[in-house]
Image (cartoon, rainbow, N blue to C red):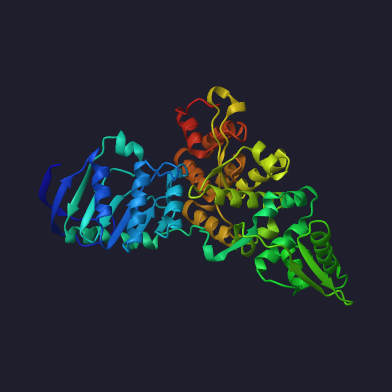
Length: 472
């Protein structure tokens, strides 16, 4: 590698003073980048700051160069180095960043997305306030192995300090990404799902019994506890009418089913019909559901089929860790949990429309649909209606209410009803090409079967430009 000594005038993208600084720079273009970056991260003593457009890592591919760099960041964090990572999420097709985010956050590394209205296009690393790595290389196999890239590693505190000036602005622009805090996760007995009890409730349409059991688990208390009828009815979505008092009867009926039909609880009932309930059975085998399932209102808003798939999704996701995505065929899931395939498929698509579940549909090579690989799934978390409204308002302020209204209509055509990021992509297309062209292209793509992976905004833009690959 050839060293270059020169003066650099540090001019950032954000307002700052620009002045010449001395740096000792080495060219690490093309194949030299990975080894240089890995060595610098491994040698870090106090801090590592990373701003990256594309970090395409795979937890199940330890030899993937990006995965190795993530492992090095995690190792650095474990040896008490301050590590902060900022990632782009402006591209709806940039799936690699999602997995990198999950791998890093689960290891305790401070990692944030930048708001999708901004594009974080930097490929910047600052180590120990003295070493700067920057250039064109993303953390992807393509960049490391195939592309022609131009990168340098520079040593100099003044230059590093100038580059660190970028990060406060990134911190201010970080997105509110729903992350499951281990301290706010509720443990559910694994046997409730794998023993097919939950499936029996779904088949029997015992929604109130299902909701009451989950609510009791959410309370997390042992022994016989008095039931507050009004509070339970509110959590179960039962209308409270004090005159008729029917909500009390419905709560008692749910408790009776949980005891007599499913053997999940015991209860006592005094002469005034005051109810005390106790959870039965104790199992160390459990999986976890976010507290936001209740606090966001999802426990009331979702159908029992959607709720059931949420349990399946979080259990399968836990089994797949550290990979945030899990992959099972609908036929396998139907057999495993004792539910009809159609009911599962409908629930999954409904959660996708609500932007609670991400589904990455796979293509069928040579239209061999019978042997097509199973889709990949990831639970995205639960967001309150107030938070959703705030996100849509922000989009309207940026693109205009009329454009966003049209974008949301296009969202529905491809079963992405509440996906704010997809609506953003549509709004940008409308601004660029005009609504009539985007609508016509979306109609063509919406005609594909719902499981076709090409039903997305990126492919729709390809249809508009006339360079879209052949559809399945």
